[in-house]
Image (cartoon, rainbow, N blue to C red; front, side, top):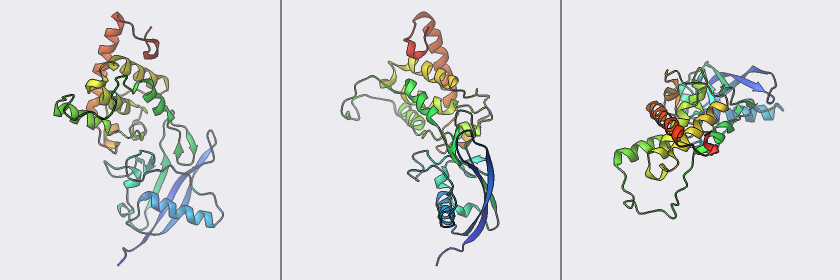
Length: 264
């Protein structure tokens, strides 16, 4: 026996393109199955809009398994929706009830300009990663698990940081549009492991300075970022990155780094 369906009203941000004026438009979502994901519900609404000859709602999606970080929606004022530790695609309509009005808009941040409707340009994150998120150590084929001993607590911590999917929820949740949690996760992921040590100073300097240059705000330690993170990445990584950054700045004063790391 199928679950009982219900109806909700959507207030969706519609914007024709970058720099264009936008507005909220109301749509009725009828016959919603509570087992639908939020994105599946938007698919049904778009099918109805298409049949009526109207422009469907543009929204980003890919894996729909909470892995890719593409489904960056602000739902009722919260990045990814009402629950912690999940992406928008993992938010299910059973979280709502008949007659609810749901407000859906894109992530709001100056470095994330709106492309169309609910789709934003988050290539700023790509630029930050390209600035320093790499290692030069030759790893070759997959090494034996015990070839390079790493303490379990260190490996676990590195994996905690590596869970970041780059969705941008931390930026959208922060009143300053800070990207500190994202950058801290990327810096810590590589900085904790032995393969990442040769570029450790250059990495943190380059990534932080690129972040600042792209217009992301500063961190004021209110931790909305970690609360909104679908992977529950701890804000403790921000403190770790700040320590690495301070040490790298000090060492760079005596040992100038290459220009690509922001050295003089």
